Amino acid sequence: MRLKPLNDSPITIFDNTMIRIREVIQMRDYPEGCTLAIVKLDQDDNKGQEIPMLFWSGMRPWSDRGAVWCPADWQSIPGIYSTDDVPNTTWIDVIDGSPAIMLDGLPRVLG
Image (cartoon, rainbow, N blue to C red; front, side):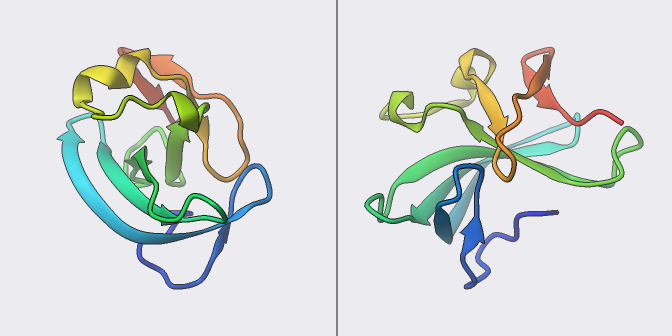
């Protein structure tokens, strides 16, 4: 996986800011091969902010790499995020900011 949760090293994300992941709280494993988690960040002014992320495994046949998706607009995340919110969220790749390709309510890793 390209984003290593709980690694003490800062990670550069799509907007060139640096984040540190403090904690990853697993919410749901999907049979399609991804995990929804609430990630607690230390990022500039957002110390302790909780953001939902989808972690895709690189172990599936349609992917030769892992991927990590986050909401495109962090400010619009509901105060209490649930699995029901996933299909209505606009997801982007955490590292490069590219928009997710949605299929059956989940962002997908293609090719």
